[in-house]
Image 1 (cartoon, each protein chain N blue to C red):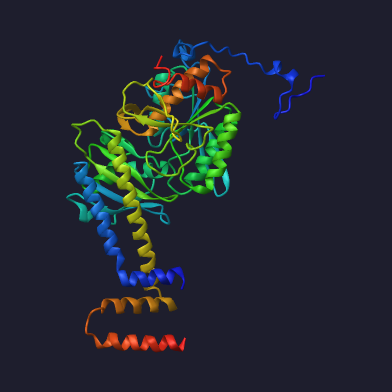
Image 2 (cartoon, chains in turn blue, green; image 1 turned 90 degrees about the vertical axis):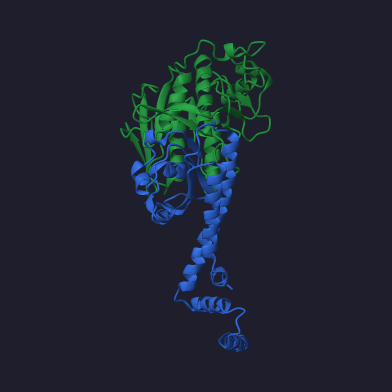
Length: 212
Length: 272
């Protein structure tokens, strides 16, 4: 069984994209709460397009943000991505790396920003941002460490999301293996039902296995 | 006829020929290390996003070079006029100048042209900077790409043997990245104190030194200033102090310089 088929069948059974999305959402929600920040977001690097894409966001305008794209070297997120160094900046309105245009198009212009690269193995998958933490307290290295821990979790979730997407692509594919994956998906969807078509399909599959 | 000393052995007669001019005092102090030094004569290279020229906190930048790749070909643009594409390089340069006001500053821009190919550009920028023989190279960035690790290691060793001190930012996160992990460089992490001359030796490497890196007011593009946190800003503190030391004691090798920084560290020599 090829890795691709295995992944496709697994994706068919798990229907995973939604779950990984929920995990990313949970990470930004918790990041925002822990840092008492106004917003938090996760951006995914689309290597083919050399662009960053909003994958998850925890703030008032979150729904509108998902899927928005901008060039990979734009703004602080772009800098963090390329340099692989986390940065904490107290006043981004005076920071030229902070792309005001990008911020305004998302409907949120922050006063302070923490940005950390999402590293998985040797790859940079994207950037986690936490915006507008309260400035009544001095930033500490303990917070930087916490940010790194969140970034690690976010990177693992992003990696899983990307795998799920590749598997979904295989699932949707027209190739011979796509059919098998779709069958696995359909069977999983009928699991637990008293569905005569599922019974019939399983019998047919058993015959098919003998034939092969 | 004098015969050149083989690199791998030292004959009894040759011992005199390698005695060093540098006289080390009985007690190493900061006063001895850089007292009265301004950085004059030390050549410092900032490998980063460029440096904004004529920033009040940076002053004159003696040379600006931009590195880029076109396929496999390395393009080196001497006299780069793009300045700083991010602000980060200007921030590092400003920290170095605040400590070593009279050092020579050279910008080698390896960032700003998008994500793709950024690792190769970083490597070529470092290679170019080492060939120029700068005394100190500040590198507040790293790569996680394993395929660059052995080449970077080789370059870091070349720098070390050519008396170029590579000062590199350690990562804030528990990941493998380079070149800061190599022992031929000085790796720097952050401490939370406000004194720019306060630096600590770490007896449990790979991070070897900690310098000021939290809430640092730094120079930024457009003649501005920002308050920033990150190892990126701790690194130029050590690079600046290294420039001071080398301006006063230009004979020191990277090994000696590192030893000197150890002996004068806040937690070793009591910051004296």
